[in-house]
Length: 602
Image (cartoon, rainbow, N blue to C red; front, side, top):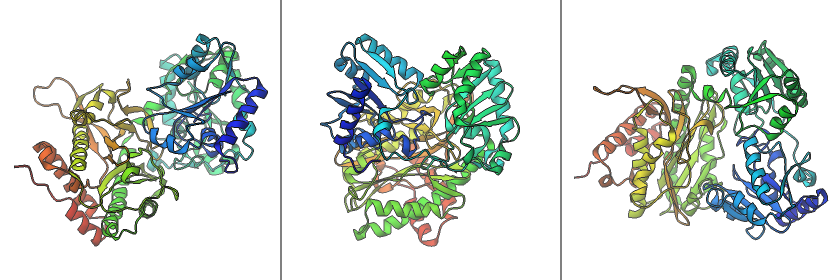
């Protein structure tokens, strides 16, 4: 990002460029050509322009005003990072961009957008808003931000590496055959793949083009004959990776994607695209070439989400090693925190080192969230030299972290009391815990979606008039994205039924702005469970993968039912048994003390 210019200067030069182009405004999303969460440095346009570094957001720059939109995870962060006098902050659900545009656009205005950085569906919605205001949504062949970002980093060129079959579990040829059969069943000749994790899964390759997620950035077209055209920088693919992907995969330069789409149109092929995840540029190019475009989900998404037995065994093994690392860290924290010498940055660095000691570790799965006191109330807080807070007695400390291992991806959050907690903190922590247990122990019919289960995690908080402004669970990949679709657990409607083999997070929370944050997150895998005698439907449930103690000093047993106490005691007994065999004597002693059964209320 351009440290030599402040936000006001950057906004001014962008407006000058818009005037040169005859535009009344421009859309700056937090996105790249792949429409995913994981964006390389050269595509961090929103951060460069506004200073906001969250993983989702949108800025709109008009001649005389500008706004920035974020979701509930980032409402505090955006106000801290982005000057409100320059970019008016908005909650993207409560105050959507469409409402703001209707208020500010004038008849005849030309609102520019980069067709590589917006999905088909997104462009259609915005075009309708502009039309109602008498304005026009205009595609730009050159991004104005790129034109004025003088020290923009180059695109990444990290090496593509094979993902060994002992971790992947299925040969790429088998996966390609499965996808080809799905295309044929749906009447499509080909599907354009733009999600890097779908391509990595399909071809059994990994890379390092984005931070903390082993993705090679590329595009692909998979055909109903099970062949693939892979549009990738050849400088990233060495002889070993070329040989590994095998026959049936034709490599081409990224610049050949456009002509490749044209060829599909010339042949009148039926081409499948994901409308909510494919750049509008691709859709527009296919339509211009007279291809028959079918809007459907990414054919790899669901197959990737349902982990095979090898991937599940790998995830369980990775979670055991990860649990040992986190427990060594928590034991150290318990010993050192009373000294008063620890800070958020220092303890995060210690946790990162603990993980790096584990076999198969390759990277963090995201930057560690290390928040003490009021910083813990910022959902995706990132400690820095500017914000680094000491871990002092009386605070709650929230740590959300994860690892990328060759055999699995982890993500765990624990909240720790630094000294005796208050009655309010115990009460609210226990409500969050009750929601976590309710989801962990849920039994539900085959065909149930995550959105149907979301209320289970929130209900104990709702009873007290409390809630949290983020999803309850996201999908997790297998040495891939720590945030993976299409499955999720959230208020927002999700039509994807949960299936055995899917891995998700279970992470209810509570956040008191300016005071403290609470979150309890473990990863779970969907499993089949027996139907009770007399039952009439097949049932699914969750197996908890994460093996890290929950801080019992924050638990109020009087607020737990007997079955909830039984679950917590059984979980801690399992953590003590499995992790105790993997750690040093000092950590084992801490583990024994912190996982003892709790006394049931009288």
